[in-house]
Every structure is written in C-alpha cells, then in structure tokens.
Image (cartoon, rainbow, N blue to C red; front, side, top):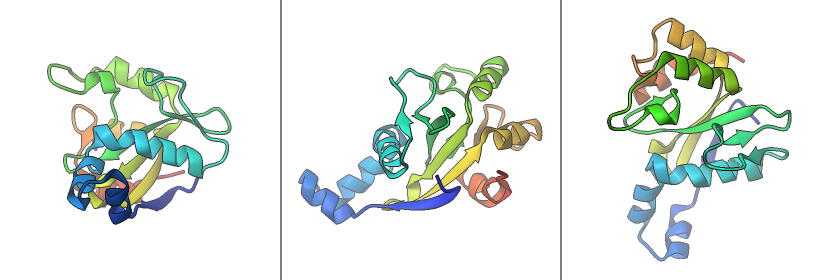
Length: 160
C-alpha cells in the first residue's frame, strides 16, 4: 500500500445508484461511523493480499499481507483519535494502559480525510509515529488531535 494516496468517488453515480440526492450521499459518506465500512472494504479490494478482520470486535480492521494489523480511522471535522475505540464516547475516558496495549498490538493506522469527500486523502501512519507524538505531547490528553493539527503539523512529520 502506498504511504499517501487519494481515493475518489463519483457522488452523482452513487446518488443515482442509491436513488438519493448527492447531498444525501455526501452527508452519509462524511460521517466516520458510516463510511468506515466502505473505506475498509475499498482498501482491501484495491490492495492485493490485504484482508478484513474476522469480526468488528477484532481490535483491528485490516490485516496486511505480512500479518500486520492496522486500524482504519476517519479524519472528521472534529479530528481523529488514536486511542482504543472503547475509550471513545460519552462517559468513556482515556486510559494510558489501554492505549499502550492497543499500540503494542497494531502496526499502525490508515487515516482517511473524509471531510474532502468525494476526494479522500489517505495517510498510512506506522504506530511508531503515534507513540512519538504521544510522548512529545502532540496529541490531546485523550490521544485525539484536531483535523487542522493533524494535516498541518503531524502529517508532514510521518516517518516510515
């Protein structure tokens, strides 16, 4: 898989196929909870040898040809988070031990900037980058970062 690339969609074609408006397509596919299913599958199909996790609760989303586990996350208007998904949401809190355990079990993150849909920038981020950003306190206290900070400060700093 390339380290940085774009995925594009034809929103008019999608709107016709789903029999909804282009605005409906854009609204749906810029919601990280909804679009992740589609992005994970598109990444799998466009990258030979990659596989989907066996279940939604697997702790990772994609398996690379060498057996490396990757999390697929969306960069939304609110930003992107690197902590385990069970630490995200109302009443849930960041837990350092859980964060470190998550980082030790994956090879990295594949981040898609869905804000630009139908053109989506994709960033492959090895876990070492996230650990470095966390130790340098470049991520928020809950391991979340704003979209602007990711794009302007962290994305240019990704090391492979």
